[in-house]
Image 1 (tube, helix red, strand yellow):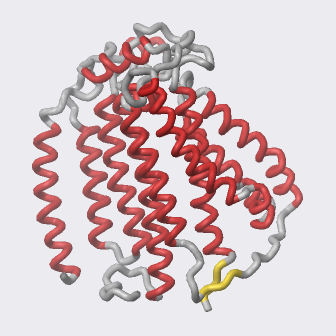
Image 2 (cartoon, chains in turn cyan, yellow):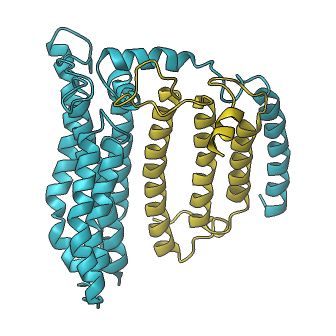
Image 3 (spheres, rainbow over the protein chains, first blue to last red):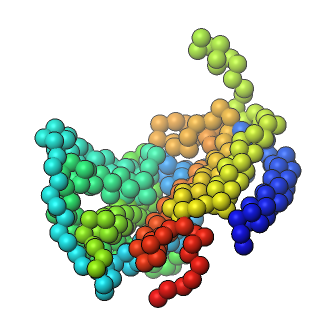
Length: 242
Length: 130
């Protein structure tokens, strides 16, 4: 199909979508209104399990099985990307050249790296209390680690990032989420049911299995992202064709 | 100044008939689709796909919004405080994670395609090559 035909087809479809979507928008509950049937049920359910962060309660308690699927989407996507980006038979690796970095940048990186890592761990650990959790904290952890690349060079990053260990951590954390669900079955309850004592709301051990699942997701997301970025960085810096 | 602003603010949970936030989500979706259809570079197309997805974030957050309500975190507020819909927030979080994962996989495919075929123009990629 040539470009003109394709663009014409798009405009016809866009018109139809805009028309139907616009009409249906008029029938949605008013913006900002008090009609929230899901919230009216999810919030009391979160408070009943002493989870202060209602979003974490929805993700890891009320619909934990969905989050298991979501976690495995991430896991398989990273697995696929790492596989597509591996070194092909007609390619060879070169060692990356050391970069020149200003001393002030190096100092800022040395100070910021531990701060970024601690922030990531904090966000994961407080996922059941405050905004954040395993997904957000994992991303903070993984990107924080790459301060080493910005403030020094690729060889330093490779030293602070043991890829084999992170590959394993990625798989084990994904498996740990699935295994934690079995605790519910062992208790004579449903898969991924919140079977641990719920604790006192507002304390770090509150929410039953929510902090544990948060930690598993945090490790999985953090290591998956590092592995993913490692695959891309290898392509850019180490792998050459021919 | 602050008091006049507060006095003018509508009461909690008062709905407006203004569908503009929902329509904005549809607009972002169509803008992204237009970019996808007219794209001349695969990386640009992936960027457009994330724009399409951003439309779903805006729609979900608009559906979950409650006027005058706060974020659904009960660490230091009483349990009866009106909050935004946590289910819509959780779905947006899922959406963001899946979106990032899919973008990463697509970018990896584009990288290898560009290396093998020497181009990332979707129109120029017509044949399969082993």
